[in-house]
Length: 159
Length: 376
Image (cartoon, rainbow over all chains, first blue to last red; front, top):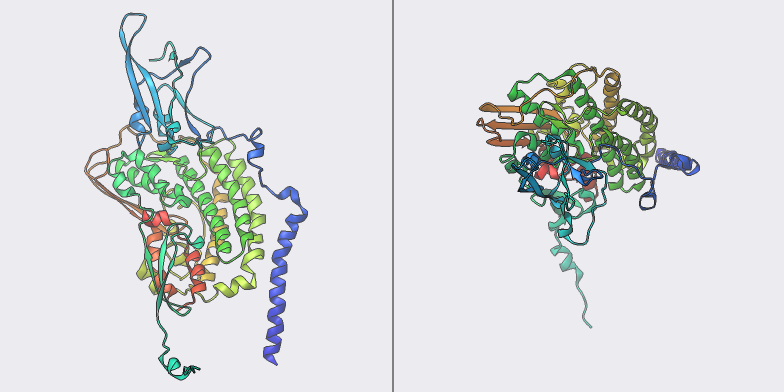
């Protein structure tokens, strides 16, 4: 007799706990506004990343194609895994002095861990973290980027 | 026609042990863990974990890196409690440098640690349900975790590998929206956490699969060094936040969640209770962030004085320790991590012996293993 009571009690409790769970599901079924799913590739136009989001390292250029990088290599030293390579050259400035300037700011995106240490170490705030996060490419070599634009110069007044 | 005589075969039948491999790609191993199970029919006789699939030699890499560069490597160990790992390294370095850390930094570190703990436990809750066959929980767990990752993304810059700590303080000050967002999250999560009980905790099937399964006694927990929620579910009082307070844990009032049973359901309950306790800690601190600097001044090249430094913190999985031996140069002579996952995994064999193979998933899931933390 006791086993029969237990049998039916188990069925009752099982069905009850299932229905309790189903009630939560049912609540969201009838309240679609509480669902937070984003339709990612479709919402690209309105998708706004946060200001501090670390997507990739970007060397800032202004409208005159001038940047703030002096080629001091502080970021290269700060980088834990050799992501940044600065190839410098000697330039003669308007005062006739030989001065070091960057030739190529090479950025190996495939090695970057987005730790933000290079940005923090830059004394002239030349580099920032960009918001682009779609880095998939078909060939690995495309991930090695040269960040200074062709023909760009150092902004006057930056030392 | 040939007649078969079965009587001889039956007497010759005897049980034979056999091996199966669970993983490294088994969906419930949460990573590349390979378990060699010795089975007798359906009963587990022995569990042998094989490691090394995700070994990146992080400890060796630390020996060539400067102290500021070590921090980001610890993100890649236990990626679900990355902030606590970062904090441990920074606290150990600060211990060597003997710098005074501003109160603001201490409170912010504690707040983000607790948010990380909640996010780790919600992910675990979702995945635990999924391991036992309920896909629903996975989606609900990730919904609530998403709000925390948004907070991290806004303040720290990344969702998972945040690298927000630097020796001496923090990388940036908190975002102006931080407090409002955390309060909004608390309000949201207080309503949603009871849903977790409705969906999973009180479910009969779930209780049948976890109660009395994988029992770990208090003595065994201590001898295997099982810490964190898994150890506390066996009655082993091991909360580093309570025993050796660091950061702002001495300023807050919170309970250490303990259970006596030591089975899978106890480990489950401890983690659910810990989420309530974490919310309690955050509530006490969120309105009381002191003004001040977000970083104590340190030299650009940090050199630790010759000596040994040890710092432990409580991550979402247990006690995490950093042991630095410095010879006075800019990178450590040797650096050792005591990861909670590795010790917790060592008790798996003891817990799983004698139980059915289907229970293996429940036992592993409640230990909350993160494989990169075990393998480093």
